[in-house]
Length: 182
Image 1: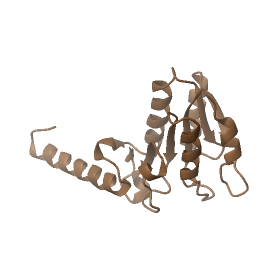
Image 2 (image 1 turned 120 degrees about the vertical axis):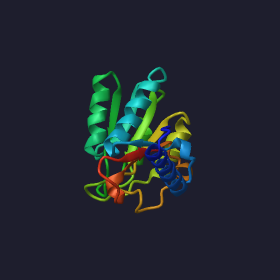
Image 3 (image 1 turned 60 degrees about the vertical axis):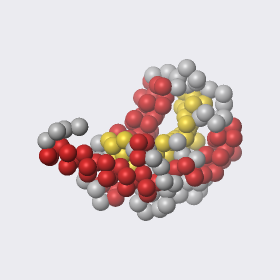
């Protein structure tokens, strides 16, 4: 919102980046929020959703093999009164869909699963997870940490049933200390 030349050029670059990311994801640019990286994107998504929806319930589901930035945030939320279910994975690193189905309850407000695991490379069936979650209760927010997959795989949040998606700039040859949350 600057009136000087450097500020106007910066605004143009930021808006262009938003348009590019939105086009790549197939979403509206107004839903792209720049952050300082993947950790901040995950924190904003998880803590923001939990706190905004705590009147609707206090249960959150994630997997045992999430990135440390998600697991640390889940511990923080546990310390602040939320009940977290950590789903086991099978020998291929995939979330056990039967365990997910069993974990869903009326108090569930958020499910967070990474798209591609940074340690073992497992690709989670996020569309299948979303369908199961939304069939149980459409108001449950589904967050995906796409830090390893964005720019390497096709990711279309609307088609895949993803409500929020975290991305880190340095994983797509951008500067460290940058990222965004859809």
